Length: 137
Image (cartoon, rainbow, N blue to C red; front, side, top):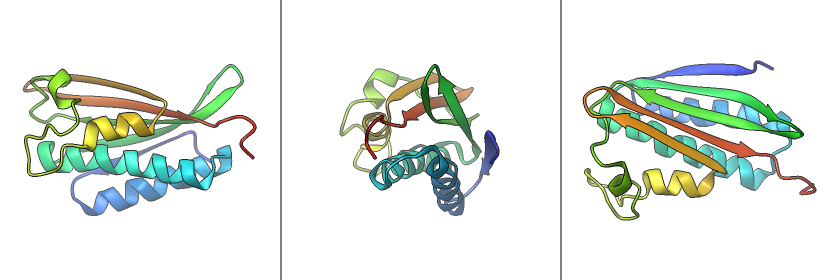
């Protein structure tokens, strides 16, 4: 199993590829089926934002370890328009598009760690991590 896989994001078809690859990398780590669904859903949300707002970007998946913790890191990056107001973008219900505005705040709730860095005119980078829960199995 590779420790890092990067997927170019250029169309809605890449959302499915990214979800599948995320689940494929997460299964051997011992995530439950529910956690796999949460990871895939969070990936869908951030990749959909790349397609909708930036038109293209990249999603990288990494196996991560910190001490005795193991998990998956999801890094979505683009060189799109950037997010002028991250605080506003992270509010439930806020959307600059025609969606329900659940994408970024929803992805944050689904994952254990979430960081967003964005600069207007230069793009956005979102880093999310999900850790395998101990004693779940």
